[in-house]
Image (cartoon, rainbow over all chains, first blue to last red; front, side, top):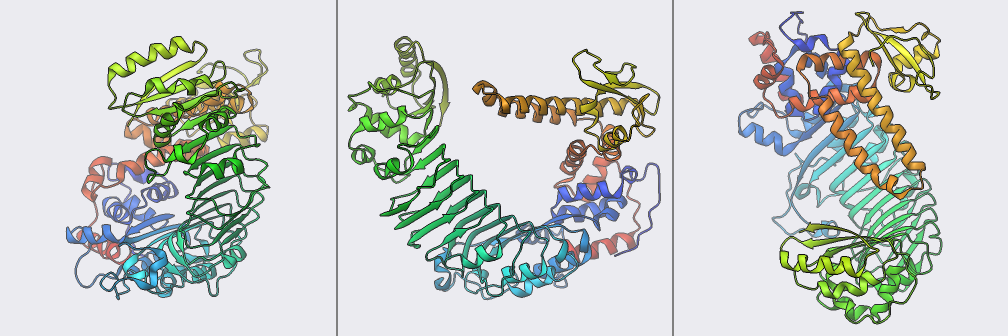
Length: 456
Length: 181
């Protein structure tokens, strides 16, 4: 640490009057290493406080940019990005509790990590931040044991073709870690140690050598939040975490089965393709967002006794409704179709549009997203039966630009008395259509409370 | 708010407790105990039975104390309203919750949009009184004023005189290059 004497000048540095701990808090909110470097040159008070900065974010791209512009230290003598990170951790030591490193770039799929085309990968390792050497550079300093949050976004061309030891090393050197996020890497779990303080884990765009998530379940038993977004290398993954409350899981079509055993899980956002087996052993689950191409033959969801809010993005409604909606006390339902859905596919999928209307009428609050709204409107012309009890108290629909407003009548007929209906007209739809439709609806359904708005 | 009064029950006859806080320049403020207790410093004094006759704050002037108490009163009222909505079976109450959060965010944004001297005083007061939410708000404001600026621009913003010698500046640049850039 450099010793720089501080002259207490009344007008020299007004920040002098603020306690060092407060200025350190400020610098922790600034976080960007380049900005902190600027602060150190601008003010004695900030310079002194910088040694207690609790949170720093280093971005390789920003660093390269500032060097090109001549702002940062330049030249061949400057340390590599990985070395800089190690130096920073050594300098801040036990004051540092949050470290974010970003070297992200490149493209590719985690499942294809070993088969990256020649020319797409980089044999250098200066930006391979999840390698054992790179992690040890900062984790093995006095910062390691006190760090509570770490995020690393690796450089995919250097990370994709070699397995990295980031997870075992972090588990060894950073026992106090509460929040960990790793992106764009191929990760080994050999030697992974238990991390009982870790409550938040995000793995994004990762090839993970833990095909059924056995090691993850064993070594991170206290997770409350788990985000597995684009994690490849999985075969029959099972999330088995007793304290999990929130889970976001986005998985490719490679795993044959998916299972979640989490007695305290309340929120699940699951994006999958066509798993042969789907097991949700989640008795506390109250909110589920499900994006799926097709539900497989084996579905075990008997334990979903607490489910009340459901968001489905799928065409496979004839499979999904009986499993997740029928005979359950669902109070909020949001529906959307996949991007890939073509015109009339919903009509083909749902043999009896009346069933669709009957299902919507059984729910207290329904939100129909744009693509679903558009296709539902096509189905409504074939609806015959609207004589059933309705629980529908709140409805939101997106009207496409075309003039289809007269087709909506069967949908409004299923609204319960005093239902609040929000109609969002597409921004490109003509004023004439809106102005013709609205009075007719208001007059035809005097008990409905209407709200209007645009969407695009 | 700036009225003299003794701590006691039911200043408004509704059974709520108020206490008196006295600024460094001897101005007395009567506030709800719940609002004052957003300050951990004041809360500990109340718990230790030091609130009788008023709580003196020799480090906080009337002008800044008024601002701090305004912040605390607003936030404690928002918490109370939010718990009522949470326990209410009225759907309108539940639906209004996000709007009320937005109101509070707007209040905070306007509240912290102050002159720099006032901002420093608020920082000092929030730190001394341990009002976490206000300290976070003020620190974030200062951080936002710093982000993306060069050293010269930071000095201009905060009216800092550059009194580093060229040698000191060079050493800082070297260390910056080694660990930050």
